[in-house]
Length: 179
Image (cartoon, rainbow, N blue to C red):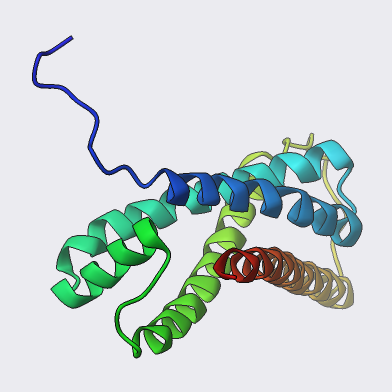
């Protein structure tokens, strides 16, 4: 073990534990929504909920670590003050937090949608091709296209509902934390 290696004197263990708590809260809520709306079995819906939440959490932390160095010093100070002491110095910080929370919500929604779409496409087991399918009429093609569009809309709506419910639960916990 190197001699100069040591743990930091200030470690945001509260922030790390709250992020872990948020992921643990979001997974069952989103798994339930995936199970009930997309008709996945319970094991599959839990797998997808864990996958999309962990991937989106890792991507979110990477975005945070890459964007944090370019923040103004005043915003960095407020961020550190909130992470370590759960308080703000400036009054206008709440407006910035509300704006940031809205951006994070929609960015997380888009990330989860694309992650789930990639998982569904990549984990789809190949189906054996049928020999010489009969010619499909234009009416059947329209019906298939409308079914695919409906499934895509259903996926967007499901992810939006799941993300909204998990963010609502996390917001309630944050409100209890602040009191």
